[in-house]
Length: 457
Image 1 (cartoon, rainbow, N blue to C red):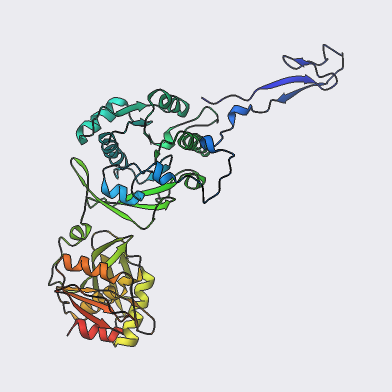
Image 2: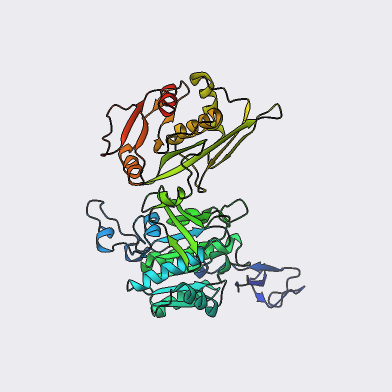
């Protein structure tokens, strides 16, 4: 595997080199002058991140070649994956895909390989975890077999790079980086030095050849990518693939993307035939909604350029102890505590002494303040034991003084709500009143008290 460090025995008086230790130098006759010296590592052990023919050349930014025009992105034919990547794979980019075991990382990449091969691209799928027959069996089950999909079972990165020279693939897949080792570094595959050396060689290959490289990365118990943090800094994009074991939905996000937005979300459903992209995630999140349920309110949140409709559920109950509980799934407990204080002070609805449970149906997490009003109305609905209108969608950020603040892209959220059959939109007052589509009633409120009166009128 790794190269051994060489050493030699040399006389400190005359510089004569011997095959071992001697009490007296055989050349000059001096006593106790033979010492061991370790040879410095040779130059080939250093990995240089080559950028191809442009290394060392200085370009003016106004005259530099536009790579996006001469070398367009390569699409995977999976719209949800291309959306998160920013439109497809960039020429010479390195993408790291991480996620918990069994979530479907290898399945997603094998289906992407099939889409790339169908688009006249040669793909080399190198696996250090499975044999060629195992990968071929999975590809057959997923319907991903193709003449331009090449399979390789190898754990040595130098052998993988050598295979790319003879087969000249358009895309290289590494599954996974923790199972590959390099001859240039000592240690077992997966340790810090090996991961750094393997990644450096793959980046050097991608930048010099222009071939996109996708690597699968393992994660730790806390959900962080295993290996040195330097790994995430070295690659061009980091994709996180996760989901709920109790649900079939899988979500793909970009935590880093040098060539696109990190706010986009890809939604998939795990089926017996592999991962199926969900083109309308809002319908999937609201598919089991009960229109007459008490303590539920629908809101619209933005995931990148895509508006999603989610149902916020709340349940209040008497607190048996002196310290009421605040249990949240998909919501921020600290923000919930603030909303309860606003309800008490500015709406006359005292619920601080009760246990409050808040859940976002579908397994998604609310991150933007635009969902504040929906959480507040769901809590008020449970407290009043009165359901909200079935066609109501609530938007708005709640301030500490009880005011409602405007949210961005109301028109896009309104269009998505109208498409799914919601005809009443409760929004904060804004300088420019948004234009509502035909059939949608826009209810504008300035404060939390006005919003409660309008919702339960």
